[in-house]
Image (cartoon, rainbow, N blue to C red):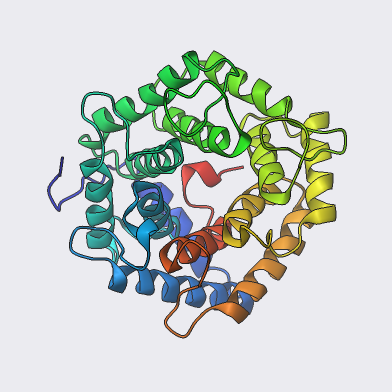
Length: 330
């Protein structure tokens, strides 16, 4: 399912776009300008390495809709015009590549719920900033697949396939973020579905605030950042659970979990962005400087799951500085 190379930019979208650009243009801080240079170099890498089908071939992950979705979010997050901007053609190819992998009967995108969650998030954010009417039906199908999978899950969460009866925090987190984004974009999402998903996550939180994988043992940085982010998206930043999770991130939030570095940075940045100003500024400066020191000359980052995923996740961990996408609002 493809749509034409022309997107549809609504008047309602224009003030959001302009305000995001003014936010950057009025800031003369050298740190922010240096960040923007790194971000643009990363986007240029993604643009030049994308193939004609809208995918990436650096690894087996580059053709998966979840990774394509991450790259889509990276293109969107800087605030460049998705219709006429420098990355508009790349965006349309990427969105088409996601839609090509969606089952038109079930709405399932790809072959795992990991992929489905990140791909659905990308569709929701693209739809939210463009209001392209061709995306709406596909986004609704993808959202309904998440909702129907939860209804048959005994834990109230999600795991690797829509038919899974058990759940884990990482897959469940991806679906919940997608549901929040879809809801922001105007898709109907029952509060009960979000509440059930959060209940599962809270059952995985230990007494120190960390989140485990399928239960409340084995907490680590990315899982805790996921749990913290979901609570923040649900406006629970004053809750004991959120405050404990932030304390865990303060104590353990080094420069990414060593086994899942960029995945960890992606979620930790979003969680700390919704904490105190002090938490965010301390993390943000450290994160940006560390990433700049490890960025390759061609603008990419190298990671376990290929340069496309690593570069997209690295960029998205810095994208909170633009405050552009709806999902990045406090």
